[in-house]
Image (cartoon, rainbow, N blue to C red):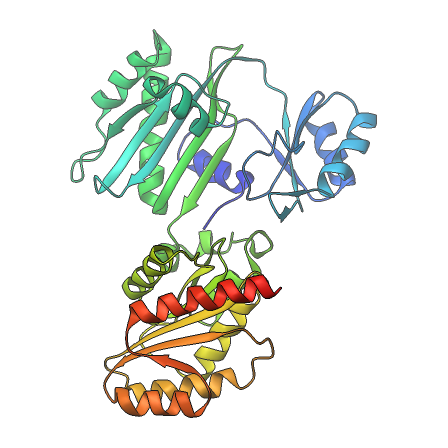
Length: 382
């Protein structure tokens, strides 16, 4: 779950990380009031779950109320990265001398948190990593002992800090690591971590991504979720207990089991197709689940064929087949559907599907090939 910048900075501040004052505004009037309180010049920042806010015009330096009365409504009317802007963060303009990048990332390969830092902050870190890979510094925390102060200190020296700033950086780095642990985040990022004219280091912009699976332990963070910033289909899938992630392809995939879903997507790619989604309906395939899953898949207008891949283990194939047939009865949009069904009572399941006019196969390879072929024909016919 992504958090807005204003939410992330609140969490960082609770962990002792210095952030500048800021006021959230949801209208031009509130922005004017906030700016008057903070004093001009101020920076107006769109609160949206999308990168590239600055390039899109979602971050503006404002020097007067007259200027603000034009800028605030303009940004509030924006749609950045497909996400609506419904709030602004108003912060005092900072006199920046140097910008750095600092983050704590869950490194799944090393199975620990890794501190990532660069003396080249304030820009897209991916761009820095691509063009100047040597400027990206990585320090993995010990999986049991955690990040040690000496590691942060060595990192500070490598980034060019001197004197009292070494200690300040170490404190910020250690606090950022503890923050990642406390909120069970997959990413806690400061970009930029700025050295300002006073000589202090301040987190001018921040981002936190929290592991969805941990939200039941953090009800306060769960309340921060902004559904307006998420895919409508993904929100609906979460509501009905289906795991769904929208992709860029045109072959919808409905599978029972996450591992099987990944294998299904791999085969679709192998035979020249592109999956439109990852969708795991769980262990069974009851009528209400199938109907909900199909509606979610077909809400994507690019989907031109659907591959249903069900393994009937604990759930019997004939029960699954009845669920698929019943669930598809209420689906209005017509696209080619291929069902791969294997497991307990498999033959009866195939008979039920074929009687309903559905293409039913036992081989996943054949089903994937057929789905790719039908999707291609359907796309051409459009």
